[in-house]
Image (tube, rainbow, N blue to C red):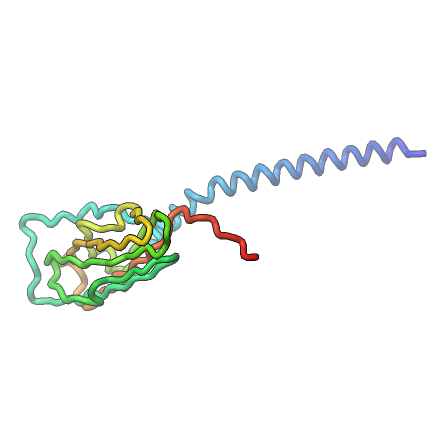
Length: 188
């Protein structure tokens, strides 16, 4: 025979456990939902992994002066995550702060399908990023490359003359990656 008090106790414990599981599931859902805006705010505060928008200050004022007494070396780097060939056409250039310059990056989609991609810039030293003003950049929006398509993509920029005088070299590095990539095939 079953003890009615034991059954009643088990039912009560099961109800409490069900309540705890529901609370945990709701908290997990809430955490997952809040993770994206929290991640974006952390990236914004730290200056890491920010999808680039056109620089608000990137329009050269008419009274802008080129600081011809200084030369800054700009080094260019390219990284990929995915099936691309991606590189700058030159590895470096020397410019005067305030002088408008252009670099071209080449990308080749090595796949037999169209792919959407995005480029994310980073700068070294990190403080130089606020003085590196892009007027035109392929990183401002996603790129769609057709099957085996090759493309040259320009970056038009200048270095703000307010760049600290101790910064003599800036590295502009782009990571080019597929957006919403195709599902991977399981290996047999």
